[in-house]
Length: 141
Image (cartoon, rainbow, N blue to C red; front, top):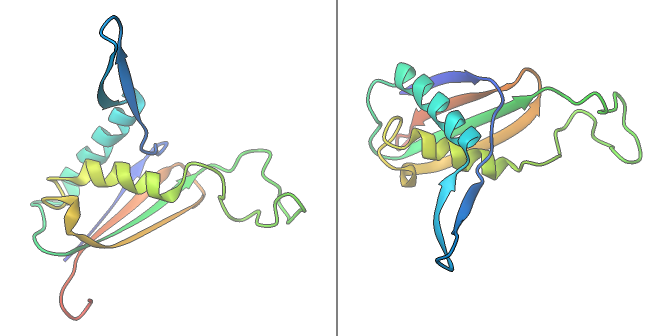
């Protein structure tokens, strides 16, 4: 069973903010910043339309994150940037994976602990995230 869908728009990476409670001398719970919460809800909306019920058992998750290349990105290899075709700037791939896994919890799979195969790539193109959720079987493992 394979489900594939694309979430258009600017992809956000995981970054929780710890809130300081003034006058109490302690910090509060870690919460999502508003733009990250908005991205999670967009992923959840697209996932609900593509995936009818959460998958059981081991799951493979593939993410391909694309963003528009900055105007300063060289067209040819230079000493400072020998890989003009690759998006080697922050945010990191694993931070994209964390936020998408959180958004898909309870929708694509019951818990993100079910993910046994995770592949994340990032590159240049139109803003968006292509997500593929695949139920693993014994032959694939």
